[in-house]
Structures are given as structure tokens and as C-alpha cells.
Length: 324
Image (cartoon, rainbow, N blue to C red; front, side, top):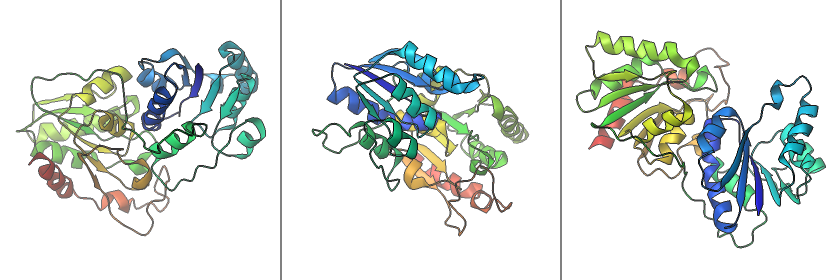
């Protein structure tokens, strides 16, 4: 059986789709997967043992995206099942143009018009559950359980316990806690852990600010990997951490996939939808304020109180409880 899977664009969302992919593996044991997604999501998920093809979708860069989508569909060919975890018109069109037998996507005006199966998936549950419900829509045998996150990249083995610090969040500045406060947490536990500072290519300056603060505090047992890792290396290093302190971000979900004890800092986003899925050693730090969650990339009111009100001492205390 051939199954086409259109992955979400964001790393974190793609990792939250892995339980749905594991369910497809379980209920269709002879299935071969073709993944289509962004460069980042393909690099993270292409190691799945059932993945036969992994293709980066670059149609967005084309002068004529509809034409490029048609050409990609003809390159992919037809499938027994095609499912999109994106709620986006070009993804629905891609499924339609493959002429696959069964095409599944969340209900929307474009999916209803183009595809055969378009269930209503309510956003009143964790995103991992939403993806699982979508994937299992044609399977009566599903027992309604959603398994843990799963990545098939081996974690790195460190010689000493490591605390990972992730101050970035690709979605926008509103999700980012402050570098000097991350540094304060790292300093507090630098006698127990070596420190690794994580970050993407656009988060190098933020990571350097953490590094500067650590230097000023005479902390030397750290490594700054911001902008220096491939996606595979990022997963390997996060998977090998003994503890992870992070914003709501893709790396946070990578840590969850490896069961890394994590303290997650939430501000403008819905922790009920995007917290670490099934990580028993996960703590959320957040404040209930009137304007949160606003789900905006930047604070629309300009005060960023949802993050500003969270002090380093709160995170230090949460880490301490996890260490005990």
C-alpha cells in the first residue's frame, strides 16, 4: 500500500504529527510512505523506516505555483491513500492532482471542493490528537489512543550530564523569553550540567547574548551550537540532553520525542494544544493574563507581559524540582 503524507511546514508541528504516522504504520502494516514537506520537516522525518521517498516541496518558490504543484503531482504519481496535515489550498490541490484513490484533509472550503474525505477536526484538543483523528478517519479499528511522539534519529551520548538551552522560537518574537534570563537559569545549574545553547540560523544573536551573560558570570562549561547544526544534528544533540529549558518551539517537541525532562516557557500560545505530548517529565511555566493566549507573532499591545512577567527565579525553581 502506498501512502502520500503532506507534512506540516513547521518542525514542531511535524513532530506532533509523528503519532499519527505511527498509527498509519500500525493499522496499515504493509504501507510505504512518501513524505512531502518543507526542508526542515523532511530532514527530521525522512529516517522513518517506512519512508520510501522524501521530497522537499519547493512549489512556493516557483513563478507559477499552480503549475509547479501540477508538475509535482505528476512526479509523485498516484497513491492508495493521500493525506495532508496542512490546511492549505495548494496542499489540497496537490492531493487532488495525484489522482489518488483516497484523499484526506481537514475540512475547509478548498478541501471540501477538491477531496474525497474532509472530516471536521475540532481544535479543542492537543494537536497530536487532531492529527491522529485525521489519519484514522477511514479506520474503524482505531481504539482512539494517540501514541507518543517518535523520531528515528539516534540521540547523542554525552560524557557528562547536559542542560540544553533553547531561547529561540521561529514563529515570532512573542514566543521568546529573554536571553539574560535563560543565562541566569544556566548559570544556576552550571555546576551540575554542561550547557549547550541551541538556536537556528536566525537566532545566532540571541544565543550570543546568552553566551555573553555566561561569560560575565564566569561560566565556561558551555557550547554554543546556534546556527551550527543540521536538523539531524539538532535532534541528536537535544535527544542526548539530560534536561532542556525552552520556549514553545520546534526543539521543545524534539525534546518531547526523546522523553527529555523539560521546562517549557509559554506566553502567547495555547499550551493545551501545543505542550509536550506524553512527556511525563515536562513542566510548563506560564501566567494567566487577560490578553493571553493571543496567538500573535509579535505582542499586539507592545508590552509582552505574558513573557516579561515570568522571572528567572520561577524557572530556576521548576528546574530544581525536576532535578530532585
